[in-house]
Image 1 (cartoon, rainbow, N blue to C red):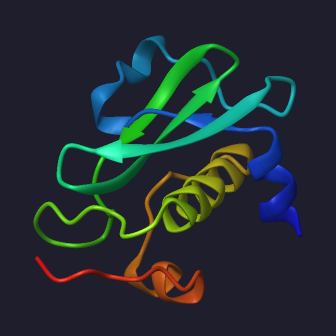
Image 2: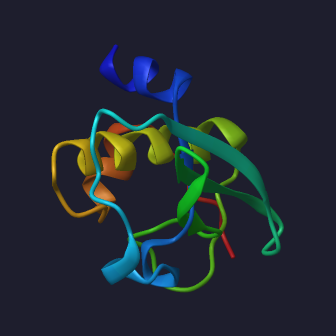
Length: 110
């Protein structure tokens, strides 16, 4: 339920691509947005925004070796929602293979 609520009010960019020193602290006072989009790797990725500032752009599935995109838009949005929940809790946005499995993310073969 928390993940569903978060997805209704969330947007994202890949944490490594952001100058973290200039990034605002994650806070519930900001509006968060999640946007699933097509990936240049022939699949889906996501972006996370805090208000209008892009924070994370993820074009491939985190926690996997190589450049494997999400198979479905739903999978990309589910993982993006999990990342927002982590950021709001003050945790790193890293996602593990176990978390991907718990969300039911389909892993496509390269």
